[in-house]
Image (cartoon, rainbow over all chains, first blue to last red; front, top):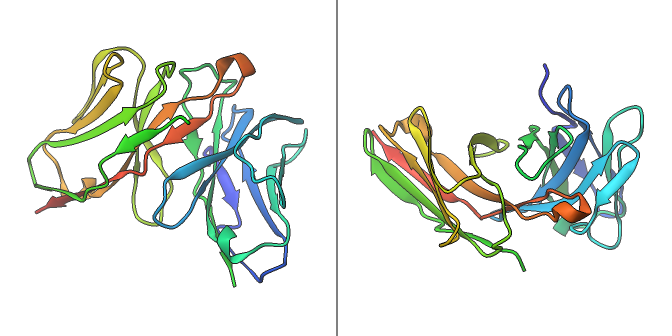
Length: 115
Length: 115
């Protein structure tokens, strides 16, 4: 499967726990974007990374959220001390080294439920 | 704040008719425009992208872009029940100078094709 992979597909956490979401980009892609989709809301940009570098984190909440894309392994979106408002679908997209006209392809998403 | 507006619908069309989906955007500097289809509980799937003013056709789909009016549309000819989904308009509103190519999404238009 050469598409964008995300795991887990579903994640249940209790308030105060940590959530770790993983994303492996499409083969040949080196850039990763994370988006969040709240129930009945549109997709919102969170962060854009390339290997070992955060390019744009302007959409990330200031606290509890962090992201990384190490030299080896998947990109990880980490949410510490989760709250009920973090319940959402989190999508990862990947692209080649982008230009303003390049396309992003989405993974299947991780659906986070906070109890 | 960069915004992308879509009529939320639902838009109902009979099978075989033309479905017309519209989108306006606020950032005049936007350079690329995308239409994604999202089935309930699934991830966004890229349908079309368009960069230049005018029409772009791909099978039953035609994207239209008018940068002067800050307007982009998607026409679906010979609509099928399988086209029933939410259609997301996305605009590349990242700052190319900063090397970011984040997408700003509308909230989507829900299309229902009636057999």
